[in-house]
Image 1: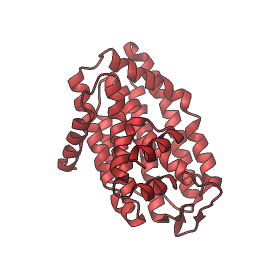
Image 2: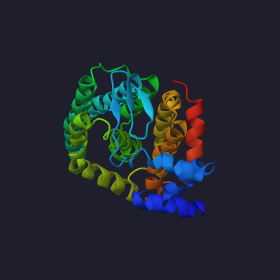
Image 3: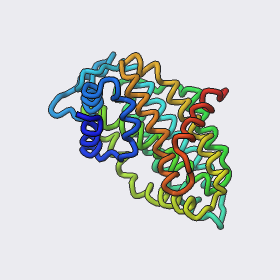
Image 4: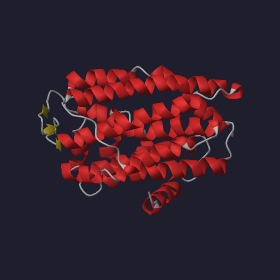
Amino acid sequence: MTLDGLIDPVLQKYSIPMWVKPYVYDYVRKDPINAIKRATSFIDVKRKKGVVTNSYVQLPNSIMFKMSSIIHMLSLFLYGTERTAKIAKAWSAKPDMKYRNYVDYYAGMVEVEERHARATLNLIEGLGFKPREPTKEVVAVFDYLNGIMDWSKRIIATDLILRSSYGDAFGLVFYKVFYFVMPEFMRSFGKAFTETEEQNKWGIKEAERVIAEHKVDNNQLLEMSIELLCRIEKSINAEMPLADEAGIKKEAKLLKRISIAYPLHRLESLGAVSNVSKTEKEITSKAKKLKL
C-alpha cells in the first residue's frame, strides 16, 4: 500500500486537514504501518483505560509519563492562562473609544482566561500537587505578546497565532489524550474550555477581517508572526527532554511542526503569507539564534 493509501484514510477519519499530510509523511516515512498505529493509539483507545498513581500516568496505549512531567506541563498551561488574563486586563483597562469593541472583547477575555486558570489549578491540586514555576522560554512568549501596542496586531496575535498554535495544537491534543486517563478531573477541566467557544468566535473573525482588509502592513504582520512563532517554537523545544524521556520525541516533534505550521497556513489562506515552507525555516533558524 502507498503512503497516500495509509495516511489519507486516517486524516479523513479524524477530520484532520489535508495540509497536514506532508508533516505526517515525514513522521511515518521510516516505518509507515507502525508509525500510523502508534500515532492513532493516543486518541483511538476504544474501551482501554489508563492508570494514574502518585508517581506516574500511564495512557491506554501503555505510554508512561512521570507525574512530575504532567504537573510541569499543566503548570505551563496555568501560567499561559494567568498571563493572558493579566495582559488582557491591562489592555482593557485603557479606554479607547475608537477601539471600544477591542476593549470590551479583552475585558471578556479576562473572565474566560481566569476561568481556564481556575480549572487548571483545580486539576493540579486535585492530583495532589502545587504549580511549578514557568520556564524562561514560555515567559518570553508572553513578554513579547505584552509588548504589542497596535490593536489590530493584538487581535491577530491572541486569536489567530496563539490560539491556533498553543491552543488548538497543544492544548486540545493534551485534553483529548489525557481525558481517557483522568475523566473525573478532565471533564470539569474540558468543560471550562469548551464553553468559551462563543467568546472566541468574535476574536477569530475579527483577526481574519483585519488581515483580509489589510489593516496591518503585510511586512509588519509577517515580522510579528515570525517573532511570536519563533518564541513559541523555542518554548516547545525546551520541553523535548520530557518527550524523549517518555519515548514520544518523534510525536512531539510532529506536533511542534504542526503547531507552527497551523497559524502560517491560516495566514496563507488570508493572503498574508506567500511561502509557508520558507517562513517555517526562517522561524526555526531564528528560534535557534534567539537569546533569552
